[in-house]
Length: 90
Image 1 (cartoon, rainbow, N blue to C red):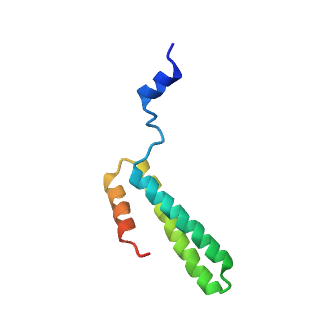
Image 2 (cartoon, rainbow, N blue to C red; image 1 turned 90 degrees about the horizontal axis):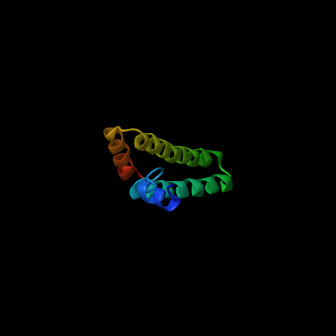
Image 3 (tube, rainbow, N blue to C red; image 1 turned 30 degrees about the horizontal axis):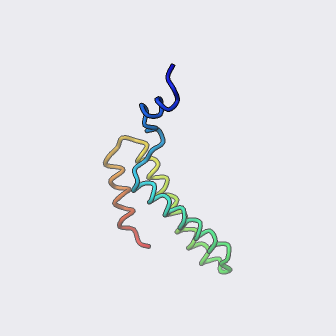
């Protein structure tokens, strides 16, 4: 019978592991999204709220794109998303 420790060593728990750059990027995007959410709640001007919501939706789209790019085997798609993240405006 195989022990659980041996099973973990053999499989290296590769399932669910993503590259470090991806985890850091998504973590940073999540923090920005949460900060924008707070700004949206505190903003009284509807036009400024709409601009903040637009920024928030843009960041959410990057996270969705990364999920699709990493989940697929399309290297070109992942490179495009990665390059658009590095060239986007703050």
